[in-house]
Image (tube, rainbow, N blue to C red; front, side, top):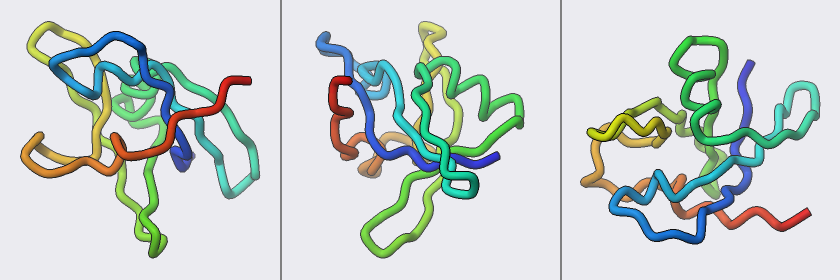
Amino acid sequence: MAVRIICIKKDEDSNDNPYLEIDHFEWINERINVNGVTERTLMHDWIKEGNGEAYITDTKGKKTYLIPAVCPRGNKYVKTVVDETITDNLLLLPQCEEK
């Protein structure tokens, strides 16, 4: 199953690693038109264990898939780039609205 990340919910606390500021992701499964919300560590495990794929799209509709990562302190997160030297469009997604 693949889902498109449509927004992110960031924690109020500042962090050395901007990916760890993401608390959860709001997504849509476009194939079956179902929405959901998933916590950062659960999204990491879901992708890493091979059960699913998550991606973002740019303004032209190009998909970029999320990859699992772990920081030196052992915190799990996801990102779309191999290293932090390139801007990650995941971090540029809008904040999810409070529901």
